Amino acid sequence: MKKIGTKRLETGRLILRRFTVLDAEDMYRNWASDPEVTRYLTWPCHASAEATAALLENWVEKYQDGGYFQWAIEFKEAGTVIGGISAVKLDESINAAEIGYCLGRAYWGRGIMPEALRAVMDYLFDEAEVNRITAYHDVNNPKSGRVMQKAGMQYEGTHRQAGKNNRGICDLVCYAALRSDFRTA
Ligand SMILES: CC(C)(COP(=O)(O)OP(=O)(O)OC[C@H]1O[C@@H](n2cnc3c(N)ncnc32)[C@H](O)[C@@H]1OP(=O)(O)O)[C@@H](O)C(=O)NCCC(=O)NCCS
Image 1 (cartoon, helix red, strand yellow):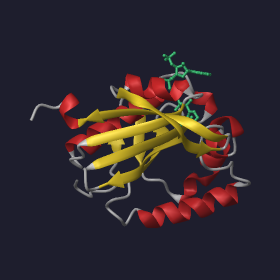
Image 2 (cartoon, rainbow, N blue to C red):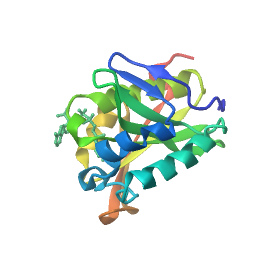
Image 3 (spheres, protein in one colour):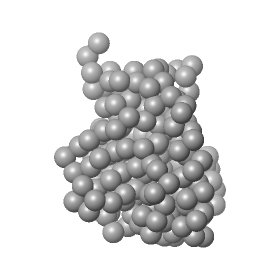
Image 4 (tube, rainbow, N blue to C red):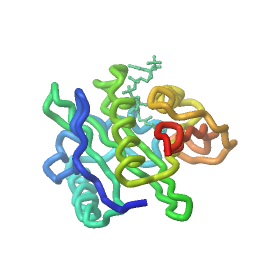
């Protein structure tokens, strides 16, 4: 795996880029304050935009680490940050990354996250030379599974009572893709 960090990526409708502290208001308003967005996530809603800014200060510092992959999703049409996508875990021993993502509710149902996920997968496979990309979702949150399917990941199994999020302990559905699923050697 090449630790090349969070580089700017662009798709038809999206710019994926590093967060800055200036994104705090948009992030707070568009998704971090919404309990519908965080329902199946592991972190609680933010109490204020100041709390979001404090978190972003921490993230911005981490960009110095080439093993830190954390993108803001900017919707070109709206000119604003509407969500985030990141590698929540890396396992260098097997050259693997686990991806997590969330999107503001006003933007659901437009295929935005599959577009972002596919761009991140292309980057990790082609430029960071990652071999395996995984993602998990709560069994009660199948729309996240649809994102994984649409991005070309394969269902690998369901781990019983293997995760904990804001709703408590849950079964986790695992999807993954290998570099060889998309690229010839
Ligand atoms: C899961 C999530 C990322 C989906 O992103 P998205 O850009 O809306 O993805 P899509 O537009 O491809 O929609 C995926 C599925 O969500 C469902 N869906 C779409 N719009 C919806 C809406 N307004 N309300 C409820 N479900 C909806 C559909 O089943 C859709 O699948 P389909 O296209 O086969 O019909 C987004 O809903 C989200 O951020 N949710 C909260 C955070 C979260 O759960 N993150 C994942 C944790 S594992």
